[in-house]
Length: 313
Ligand SMILES: Nc1ncnc2c1ncn2[C@@H]1O[C@H](COP(=O)(O)OP(=O)(O)OP(=O)(O)O)[C@@H](O)[C@H]1O
Ligand SMILES: [Mg+2]
Image 1 (cartoon, rainbow, N blue to C red):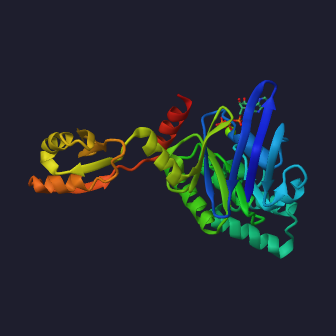
Image 2 (image 1 turned 135 degrees about the vertical axis):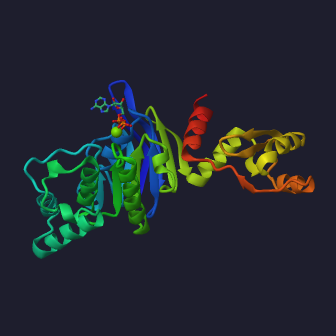
């Protein structure tokens, strides 16, 4: 659906995007994470055929960005990080205007506008002025706009930026719904936790270079490799300090210490030890009452910090 090979954009001496290669299939939700100025918007604009690369190849829905701009624009929905304000235009009119640009006519147009408004839950704002919408509503309107022509591929540049926690959750739900419809979605963010649980693939970009590109599982296993052994959380309640002391004495254990915030003992295994089942076994054997046992989850923030550190240092 989206494929780039060595996609590069140079501004003078600056490589805004530096030999970027990636491949996305239908149903993929790609989290494109990177700090300010790392090249996310530049990449998306090249894929949306709004900006010419310096070199490299990219195809979207099978069309080359060099020769298939018209077809690509029809097949994608690009939501920029900032969209212009349309003074004196009502929400409904705004969408009618863009539907007309996609040559959706007459009754079909009315129906389509009502449908996308309903999709983003803005039906009740149909007659409100676009300028009167809150930030979150404006973002949702932006999403409604790129859904008008039912695109197969969505390029969403910072769809949740500036949203309050609740609006963020709503935006996430909308994206999850689109994922279930097998669309290919690339979404950028510099806020890490925002992308957790909606992406199946991740790209981490820094100064134009893709430091990591792969599935979320690959990212997790990479983090485990870089960190050393696996980490487990175990709790025996009030006797946690005692349990930590006992576990620290085993040769498989690199470290065991009470993590007060987690109300558990954090047990890191030595590199190369994969099986943590001895932890509950030994504790029970020593008459501790086991309350919980699980592998420590790696969240997207850990992934980002470990991978950028692991690769750049
Ligand atoms: N038209 C331009 N002329 C010169 N440099 C540019 C131009 N557009 C972007 N850049 C530079 O390219 C780099 C990447 O910018 P880009 O907008 O792609 O970053 P980004 O990852 O989207 O950042 P943000 O998180 O702030 O949106 C930056 O260093 C930026 O200054
Ligand atoms: Mg940007």
